[in-house]
Length: 431
Figure 1: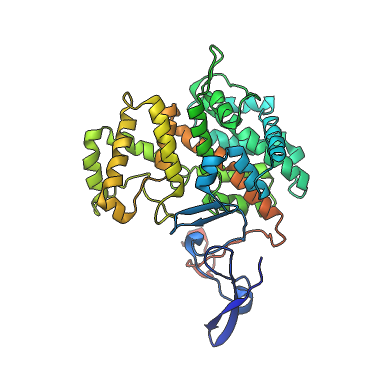
Figure 2 (figure 1 turned 90 degrees about the vertical axis):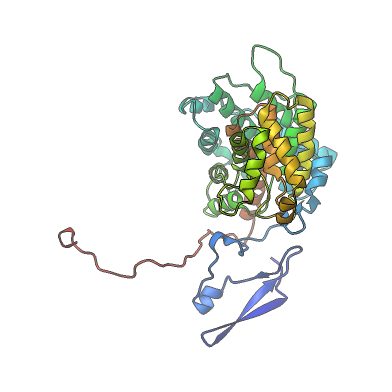
């Protein structure tokens, strides 16, 4: 934490309090209220923590007004264009872009940890075949602590390192197994001769009966989806991981908590909700009807996949994702897929409609990622698990940063209590 060079004065009940102000390397100044309760006996009130910095971090920075997303200072569009997912993983974990030797070593360590313990296969048999893959993912990732107890001690830096590599390496395998289980196909083991993204696609779509070749365009598109979802500052799931971590919980339990939070439709489920909206529209000729509904203030309907809570101008990830969507649809086509036809026409209308431009309701990363995953052949139930495996490195990076922070303490939010005050218990006969 930097030293405060400024302060603010709070006048309360005739008393004056000096509150330190920290100036970050980027973003707004931060008012330090840590001693406010001890000194003044009051809390602050901030539902959703939208005006509260819960930690200091050096990993990711977002400027929603500029449409800027930086990982360790590097713009997301440059990383998506010039880098690949495991290099971004290294950057998030260790704070710098790797040398060739460092990257080779890191990729080798991840590759050698992609298999899961054979007995973990039995876990899947305990789930119903129609269970949502996210339910399976939460359960199996949480169970990893039972199989990898030799890397569950958060106080041991080496065990934290091993757990980090294991989680990044095994999440694609577990997600692919959840998918295969849901469709009744045999599990496909990882292959060390394939890169991270190609390996995931192979585990999802290959079958023992015939050879499967991963198209490089699809592999690159998958890799970009991973990169663009790798981390996103202190969002709900990341904050969940940090809060769970603050208790000293093992890393597998913390990541499982993050996955559970991500499952919500307002968070990781947004791209699934987008595709479900496209299905509701159904055909190109019905688009004007839904555009009119989106503009009607009295209609609760809203277009999913447009605009973003944080980005007030444009989502910097969307431009890169649009390019991937165009490449994938160019390869696979949309002629035989009414859903993708609706998506392309809706995108065209939204980008040229003055209403959407005025409201800054541009297609966001969820809109384009949903289109890509649909075109690849993934069911919508797999969209959020793919998001989860992408985000795992961000969660781990935030977790490692928090564990190493000397200011780390167990999270304990306060409340504005509006319930009953003290009252006496009454026997049931007199109620």
